[in-house]
Structures are given as C-alpha cells and as structure tokens.
Image 1 (cartoon, one colour):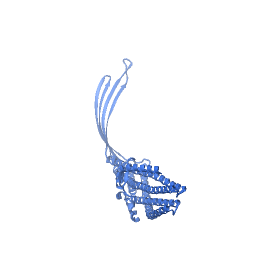
Image 2 (cartoon, rainbow, N blue to C red):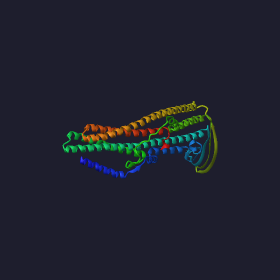
Image 3 (cartoon, rainbow, N blue to C red):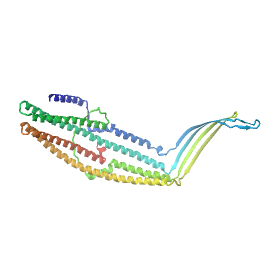
Image 4 (cartoon, one colour):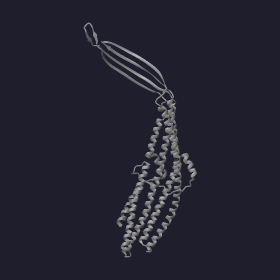
Length: 439
C-alpha cells in the first residue's frame, strides 16, 4: 500500500510539472484558434478562392481569344520529264521552303444571351461556395464548443473518481489499522482492498479518457498532439428560455443550409436560361493576318516570294434541327428546377422537425439536470452520513460500498446532464443560424 501511494505521489509530481507547461485556454480562445487553424475551415477557404477565380467575364465567355503561331514548310519534289532528243527521262528536282507567321482573333459576338446568363451563374456559384464555407464554420464552431466541454466533462469525471478512490484508500487504511489491532477480520480487509484497487483502475482508465478528449480538441483547433492546454472555463451551463415559434421563424430565415439551397435553386433556374440560349442564332467573328516568305529552287533556278493576307470574317449560324437535343436539354433543366424546389420543401420540413425534436429534448434535459442536482445533493449527504456510520460500526462494508456507488452514479448523471444540455443549446443555435453571431 505504501509503495502504491509513493507511485501515485511520483505521478502527481510529474503531472504538476506538466501542468506548469500547459497553456491556459478559454472557450473564446479555442474558437479563435479553431477559426484560424482548423483544417476543414482552411480547406473550405481554398475551395472558395477557386470559385472566386472562376467568376470572371473571361470564364463566362465575354472576351475573344487571340492565337499566334508560325508554320514552316520544307519540301523536296522529284518530277522527272521525258526528253525526246535523248529518248530518256530527266530528273526534275524542286526544293521548296516557306515560313508563315500568323495571328488570329476569334470572338463569339452573340450566342443567345449565353454569356450574360453564364456570368450570373458564376456569381451564384461563388455565393454558393461562400455559403458552404459558412456551413463548415458553423459545424466547426459547434464541434469546438462541444469538444471543449467534453474535455471539461472528462476532467470532472476524473475529479469524482479521484474522490471516490481517495475515500476507498482511506477505508483500506482504516481496515488495515483495525486488522493490526485485532478488531477487523480478513474478509473486511479484502473487501476494502478490492474496492480500492477497483476505484484505482477506473481512475487510471479515466486519465486515458481525458488525454483522448484533449487530443480530439487539439485536432479541432489544428494544434499538434504535443501541445497541452489548461482549460480555464468552468464546467457549467446557464439555462435559457426559448420560444419555439421564434426559433422556427429564425430557422426558416437564417439556417445556412436552407439559404444555400435557395442559392442552388437560382443556379438551376440559370441552367434553364443557358439551355434556351441554343434556340437563338449565334454570331461569331474571325479576323487575322499572316505573312508567307517562300524560297524555291527548281533545276538550278531560284526564286523568292512573299505574300501578305488579311481577313475579317463573320459567321451567322442558326440551328434548325439537331434531333431534339435542345428541347430535351431545356426540359431536363426545367425538371431539375422542379426537383430543386421539392428539395427546398423537404429541407424546410426536415429542419422544422429537427427543431421541434431538439426543442423538446432541451426541455427534458433541463428537467433532468434539475433532478440530477437534487439527486447528487442527497447522494453527497448520504455518503457523508454513511462514512460516519461505517467508522462507528453501524453499517458494514457492503452497505458503505453501495452508498459509494450511488454517489458515483449520481455524480456521473449530473455531469452528463450538464454536457447534454450544452449540446442541445448549441444545436438549437446552429439550426436557427445564430451560432456564428452568438459565438
């Protein structure tokens, strides 16, 4: 027993050294770190940057394309001719070399308002990407808040288990002392020993749970595992009163998922306009210039030539029939727009159901916390009375252990009730679109 206590003392010393190196962390600090370092937020930010890069007049097809190039021809021809005087064929060697630089401009001047509609679609896609980034931020904020309080929860559980372990250790020491003076039997000593080592095992396992909770929090904050934090905020919750009708109005107006779905619906409408642009004629222009310099050598006769070309051509085209592909594309876009409208209706109803469910869950969890507070007060008083009775010999070790377990369960239920209530509050804020402004 003495060696075990010495080992615990050494662990506590090492923990004390570790605590001195820990960085104090409030919930506000955790949120700021997460917004800056969280990997998912950083990824969504880069994806939004891509959508901004793609939202240009050039990407929409507004501007012409200009190409510049050069062609080179190097050719040898052997065309024999028949000589009647010698009655034989004479070789006719011809060498041709030419170099032609050129520049060309291509510009789609009109294509059924496609460019305007496409640019409007790119604006909406950028807005949709921003909305998606906002969703990532909201989910990350919720995860950080719950991760912070979950680490506090595991620390509080560790404190409770330490208190129970210390009480079991005192009881074990007390039984050993009674055994030494001959007033305790071996059965009572073994009972106290088993309880103490069982509580010590639970305490060590809970230390691992605390470490894992902090590792998960570090991942949310974008911090490496070796960084250690000391959580400053208290593990408590301030109960709030919520009006379901007001929450429902805020949800239907401010929920980010729903707002993003509205943007997606506008994108689907733009797709209809893009498909209809194929019903219009298209007008395009091609303009350019080239210069050709040639060198010729034929039967030892040499010649140099050059040629300038300038052109500016317009093409007007109108598709009369393409197998009904244009009509099918328009009908498909219209059906997709109808599907999008149904998805909005489904999402509105889903959010309404989730809100009502979470609201009722919050009310129940608030009542459970009140019950847990009363239950823990009774369990603490009962444990205090049982400790005195056990020392006086009024109750046996079995009765005392039962009281210990009742206290442990009551403490656990209260801690869980606090965390569950924080979880419900955070979820209500996220559903109603207020988690970013609130935090």
